[in-house]
Each structure stands twice: as C-alpha cells, then as structure tokens.
Amino acid sequence: MHADNHADSHADSVEALCRLKYAYFRLLDTKRFGELGELFVEDGTADYESAPEPYAGRAAIVGFLEGALSDPGIVTLHQGHHPEIDVSADGTATATWYLFDKVFVPAYDFVLEGTALYEDRYVREGGVWKFAHTGYARIYEERRRHSTGELVGFTSRFAPAVPS
Image (cartoon, one colour):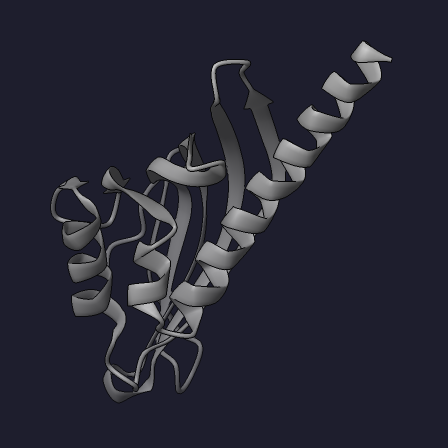
C-alpha cells in the first residue's frame, strides 16, 4: 500500500506540473503577465533564447514578457507538448517540454513560427509546485510576411540559415 501512495503522489505531482506549464502558456497568450509571475518563486529565473539576456527574479521575468508582448497588436500562440517530467523525493522536479509557437504582428507584416525545447526546474513552495527556472533553446524559427506568407528568414540548429 505504501508503494501505491508513493505512485499516487508521483502521479499527482506530474499532473500538477503539467497544469502549471499549461497555465504558463495560457497566461502568456492572454497577456496576464502578473498572474503568470505568480507561477514562479520570488527568485525564479528564465533564459529565453530570443531574449537579450537571462532574467533573475519574478519581477524581471514579468517585466521582460510584459515589455515584449503586451502590445495588443501582438498575438501569440504557445503550445507545450510531450513533457518528460522527473519528480524527486526532495520536493524538486525537472521537465523538458516540446514547444510550438507562433507570433503574429500584423502592423509589421510579420509572423514567426517555430519550435523549441523548454528546460524547466520546479520546487514546492507552501505545498504548491512553482517554477524555479524556465527557458528554451530553438530547434527552428521561420519568419514570414503576414500579408503574403513570403519567407523572409529561417534559422535552425540543423539546417543552413536563410537570410532575412
């Protein structure tokens, strides 16, 4: 019976971590950056490959995301798939998530589509899972004109770049 309780606890943690990441994407795409910040511990960190620098602290992470994406003319879609989650007995966890994202900026006749691998670290704070760290490295990124679909740039870790 003890093993079953441990399995249930592990399954509950995995489910809670999935829900945490899903909330992150939902709050990001609905531009609810303050609520997104609450998903992080106060001293959480983020390292987004497309950002100019890594960010330390909830306020810095929220500030970057709000500054980059709060314009109502920017529409985003972020989807996380295929989580590989490892939960430790010490109240920490790690995960790799496969990201698919699109960013639309019609005012600049721009659309970006890409994939990346997120690497997350989590901790339990007051019995609740929170992000200690999140960040991603791109697999590919394609940039197009929104009006025509014309390819204007492509980068990938595995293929030659197409200049912008």
